[in-house]
Image 1 (cartoon, rainbow, N blue to C red):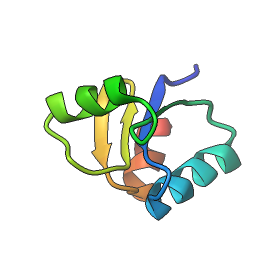
Image 2 (spheres, one colour; image 1 turned 45 degrees about the vertical axis):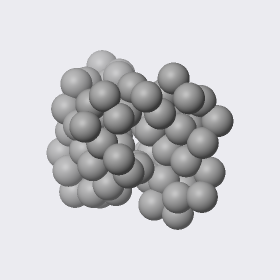
Image 3 (tube, helix red, strand yellow; image 1 turned 90 degrees about the vertical axis):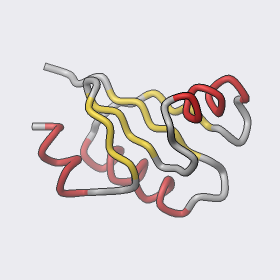
Amino acid sequence: MAKNVTVYSSDTCIYCHEAKKYLDSLGVSYTEKNISKDMAARKELIAQGFMGVPVIVVDGETIQGFDKARLDMLLK
């Protein structure tokens, strides 16, 4: 069953690029919310208490930063 994955990212974040590249390599589809271009996404992220990216949400579970081990666990 496919997971619902959202990635909050920015254009200049190297960890965001790595996280998206990793998800792509696994064939995981995700919704990207780029806070560099989307002010609503930026406000949404701040309202959740986050000031940095990447923030990855997998079926309601939030990961701050690119934590490959936790990502693998949540994607099983």
